[in-house]
Length: 433
Ligand SMILES: Cc1cc2nc3c(=O)[nH]c(=O)nc-3n(C[C@H](O)[C@H](O)[C@H](O)COP(=O)(O)OP(=O)(O)OC[C@H]3O[C@@H](n4cnc5c(N)ncnc54)[C@H](O)[C@@H]3O)c2cc1C
Image (cartoon, rainbow, N blue to C red):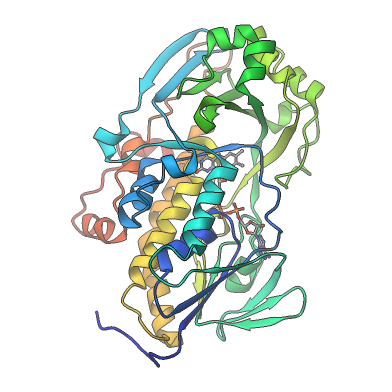
């Protein structure tokens, strides 16, 4: 490909709307000399959410190997996940699935406190210590819309900004999505909600000792307690000093109204949560009872969109393909989007014309859409009841789609394998079709 320049003396101006994982990852991927990257974030980024997040090998490989973030694990308080431990509703461990991510996929599955991963990515995007011009992060900058053809971003304050490339990384309720599609595409309730709790391990050990006897909260495993339709998904963060619990519940079994729970800061009600999990083993309820703060989030996702870009603008991450958290791929897919942007724009050294930008954005869309859409469907599949009704036998396998998800090695490799028809979805393809 030829290096494209309108004028090599003026920088390539990039605006990223949203300073979450997708926005920061895009800034890291696109950082280069002669590029001026501005991230516009609506919040003040002062209060992160008390929850854990994991990145899968497909994403950690990009961070470590493609972007050279070799201190990812140690520099960010990450914890390598050693495997899944599956318990039935009687609290009996029925399966242990070791994760050999490094040997199998060349990179680890890593768990974090969201705050730690966010802080690490923010530093990598804005630090002067890395190659390329650092991104500028502007907080309290809420964008209301974008003129995609002209690359104009309009803030709620009335301020207008202009860029050669606009990236909408503004999450599930994206404003940029509406500008790009020319219509609203509302995320749909998926029929499930999630409680989120985070407890210091010392509190668990002291006040819920039976919990710690059954599940050692300092061990780096993802533990899942599966009833027919409710489940608890749990794991450590910050070297085992914190323990995270996510409780998935069908909306129809909620004892409180989750319809309004569309913000990361919506609170759940402790007694009502305990009522929902009343049939779970008593030692799990000991832990739930000791949570100081409970978040509640109604899980919504998007049907695959037929368009992610228009003119100079594109959406990525949850704005483009919000998915259920049942495979922990939401954030990892945003990293893949960012890698595709970074790679496919890598030959651009000056200011690109609108046609050049549009053509590359179409390549990003073509290379990412099929895979992200399929993983959205896998995630819906993984949310289905874990057992037959009235049975204790767990039929759900958390590692079911691992090979498809985790063998990703960046956009060029993917395109090459696709052209050779070398990608297999695995035995379960028919189940998600
Ligand atoms: C309960 C739960 C557990 C999860 N667990 C995992 C997990 O373990 N692993 C995983 O990979 N994924 C997980 N996910 C999904 C994951 O959190 C998301 O996929 C990921 O955070 C998406 O990142 P994003 O940057 O696209 O969106 P967001 O994280 O939502 O970030 C969007 C950013 O844009 C800002 N913004 C929004 N609108 C505007 C605007 N108009 N102007 C300026 N700024 C704006 C927001 O303030 C925010 O900072 C989970 C999700 C849930 C609900």
